[in-house]
Image (cartoon, rainbow, N blue to C red; front, side, top):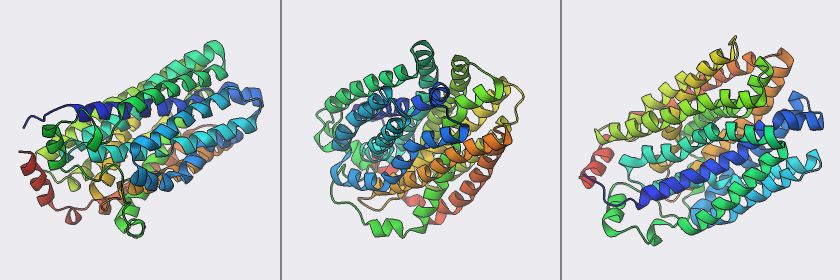
Length: 429
């Protein structure tokens, strides 16, 4: 069946654009970390604490963000949050001391807390099940595309005008997106270009959860072993990919003596591979499998576990003898993790109780960022005492193995009857 209308894909593109801007804001400190550390005299361990300041606040607001997304909806939450992204970047750009930089990163974590949870919620409301992986890959793939764009762009800006200019650049991007979001995003029940045939296609295809309303039962979410298993599994994924995200520019500079601009180019390649892998395999291929009759949940398990297994090649990157070798291993690892990502992010829209897509996504991202916060600091500490990034990257392999063991039972077939997928396909046909 040819789907009617394209309003939902315009919304998907808007969500993806917001995530790109969101990750520019997050990444700029990683790119600016070396000149910033030199100005303030920071060790690797101290730099790890500064880099983790964003993660601390971002982690703590995940569950409240999920509750707020379920209560007031994505539209208004981002209308409030996006201008705060800009304020946080501006405060960093004008900071005269390390304390204000840490404070600004904490503010950025609070403001960006609803971003991924809100995108997951909006995707569940706007897209039928047979398009859910592509839609999820669109916004989550934007996190990888942002790094393809952010590392070389910010490296050039910072190399040319200093690290403060990088934060002024992200301030301008955030303000621009605030205007675009205010004008462009509407919930499905109020969107002026969502016409009857497309609305029926979305609803008949398994789109779920009104964009806002009465939240689902929090006790049921917190009492579900299955939801906890997939949340902790997602934490293992997030630990590894965020260690790479945060430390990749420093890794190339410290391990191989690369200049800042050169490190930005090295870092761009793995994220480009990850973007392509997520859109093609984690998005298009998974949707094709579901259209072909595979169960919407159980059919995702081999893709997710295979992605985590390929992600374990990050252990080889720390022992690479050349920057090109490290780029190769990082590309394989991030490609695998990128395949797993849209599968993981689509699970709240498939498995959450009614009215609780946001809170399940918030719990997942809470576990993710809690692991990330510890991982960023632990990586800096291990790299400092061992003199290389080999040990922290090998430890990330162990974390990924634990994640696979958690996801295996969480996506077992007996909890995901194939009749559900068959009913959805019948409605679409």
